[in-house]
Image 1 (cartoon, rainbow, N blue to C red):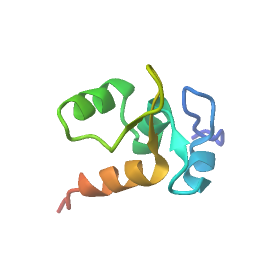
Image 2 (spheres, helix red, strand yellow):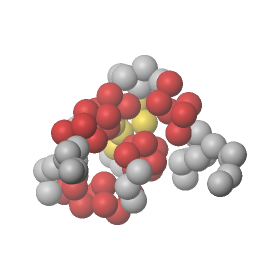
Image 3 (cartoon, rainbow, N blue to C red):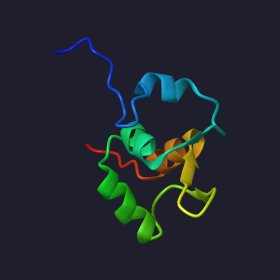
Image 4 (tube, rainbow, N blue to C red):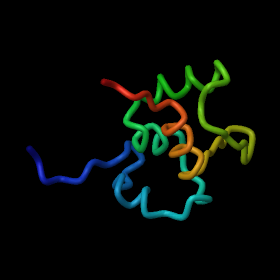
Length: 81
């Protein structure tokens, strides 16, 4: 097992992302890293209306927040027995 911290494709360490304030804006790549899903899966969930809340900050800049991603992950949790 590697001691190297997991990083998002954008280059930020996931533990650093999780230490940000809940309202901190993050990219969708970073959101996928936090949720441990692929960027494609996150995009599919968003287009189906089941993804985390996202905000358009410009013509192409779409962001979400750390808190919204964590809330989305919790809402998708399923108890496995």
